[in-house]
Image (cartoon, rainbow, N blue to C red):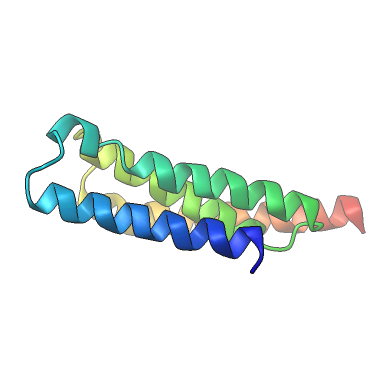
Length: 107
């Protein structure tokens, strides 16, 4: 088992336990509103891996990072659900542009 698979497996278990504890009101509300930071961290990690692999996976990293930022802002009332699709489309477009830019510099 690689360290990457272990990381993702443990991360999903911890995130699931966090949601479950929140549903049972065992986690303070203010603490649980920070869960998107885990998604943002995963997006940053994916971007780093994409840079290491020559740009492969860059779009996914940008999308995960943007979704994490969106959910964090949504938890604090800065955005609403109607903005989800535009943010997703902007993240996809940004990822595609960055990938093409990265590949043109590497290749």
